[in-house]
Image (tube, rainbow, N blue to C red):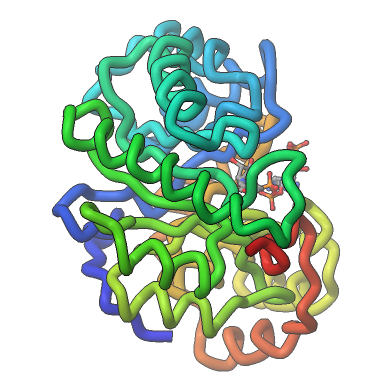
Length: 290
Ligand SMILES: NC(=O)c1ccc[n+]([C@@H]2O[C@H](COP(=O)([O-])OP(=O)(O)OC[C@H]3O[C@@H](n4cnc5c(N)ncnc54)[C@H](OP(=O)(O)O)[C@@H]3O)[C@@H](O)[C@H]2O)c1
């Protein structure tokens, strides 16, 4: 897929000029010493984007890790997300303050709405749409106040995006969604691209499962790369930024710019991986949410 996004060798330029690093570190289910070691190692090898969320409950630990690493605030790109239980004006306002406090930062680089639905609300209820719009207004206000450099959503389907784009004062700049060879989301990514929303792919490794796929392993062998590198390269060549998660130093090594940005999959490799599409999702499904 070709994209409208402006890409440098290391980042995607968002609508407002902010540079989103192409490679980041996911942190879902990462905690404690493992998380601290992995962040330190990731920073050492040049990874500059850390993806977290209120629901991951690791923002304070990430703040500790960044402090321990002694990295300057402006040298790291931090994304966090307002959780599904934090929709609505009051809760989202509080959620944003708490995120900034836990991360011990003056500003976020990217703030996302994690999920289009409200926790525990009937997915068919129209109140989901009302509440997530209230949340968006809070996000816009935080942006206007300079407390986040870029804003966006996650797990938004075309319908959710169309509705938001119609009323947004400040347009979303990013949609973070599940994307990998088995669930490519080509239509949604094209929709995003046409509206200048950059796509951050999550679960690029199929939550670990795709690392064992025979086609992935075959392509990896032919390039002398690992299965993870092939899957991440596939995501990058689809025009996405990627945020693989690991708590192992040896795996982090595979995510350096040198390891991911200095080589390419051929058209034939891409074709072989593209045929793995079977609509299989590893994570949650936002499609039914009104
Ligand atoms: N917005 C959303 O709704 C949403 C949803 C899901 C994920 N995310 C974000 O996206 C990130 C990535 O997604 P994900 O964590 O679901 O899955 P993922 O990155 O596809 O896969 C992570 C799994 O792969 C393993 N792994 C990673 N690198 C490896 C390597 N080189 N070799 C072998 N195994 C490897 C990890 O093991 P170890 O950890 O044991 O090393 C972990 O079990 C998350 O951490 C989170 O930040 C966002």
